[in-house]
Image (cartoon, rainbow, N blue to C red; front, side, top):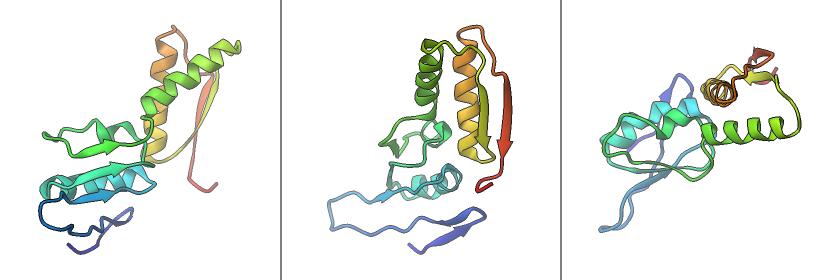
Length: 132
């Protein structure tokens, strides 16, 4: 397979393993690129290991069977944990500062959902461009 470029960066390079062993890809840092790679991963039936890209939709996708595996925490679990910790410390209306990326969107959904479970909402949500 060759490297293909997406609008978000260069994605998937993989190596054919000896016969009898599965093909696999270790994903990169950005959820947006990982989302773009899903179609290729599933078309070629590659095992897709994701230690960094944490956007929930990367793993919780519509592919059956699903070859994408998180080897780190999902945003929805981290968001719930962070809100629990904030509430434990006495904060009731945290403000959210998020990146304008797929990862930021996934974090917003996770944090707002966790707050709603407690009948709360954020004091505000500010979205910034990466690197600003």
